[in-house]
Amino acid sequence: MHPKLKLAFYDLLSMLFRNHMSTVAAVPPAVFQPLIKLIKSGLGDLDSGASTSAAHAADALATAYVKGMHKESPETRHLNAHIKAMPQIFEYLMQHLFWIVAFSDVSNHYTLSRPLLSLMVASARVKESAFAELRDKILRS
Image 1 (tube, rainbow, N blue to C red):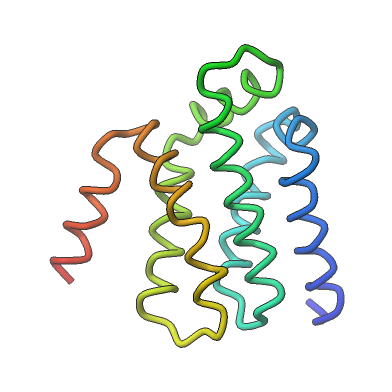
Image 2 (image 1 turned 30 degrees about the horizontal axis):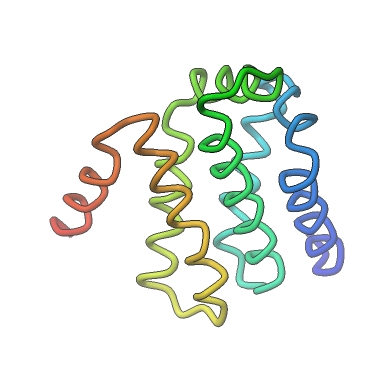
């Protein structure tokens, strides 16, 4: 992907997840799952602008899930349906992001580490043992 197009795309993705979560949550799983994969690939991008925007999108997703846990709204119902279809979503993003922050030489450690807390809380809400499993996996390697 062309660098300028890539940066604009990840900025758009970040804006969608931060400001239009109800629209993002309402898309079918065939669209939502590739969006998550695009966020994951953006997190590992060498361009700090793209990885920062992908980190903001991941943070917005996890925050929306945690904040909406006890609310009844169409956004929450749609988001919960996506989480039920793909329960490892937060664990998947958290693990990938943790490896990047811990073991990669990137210039934007702070912006990449920011979504870790919201991803940990969200993954613990979905699966209580998610963080313990990640810790054990890291200690074994």
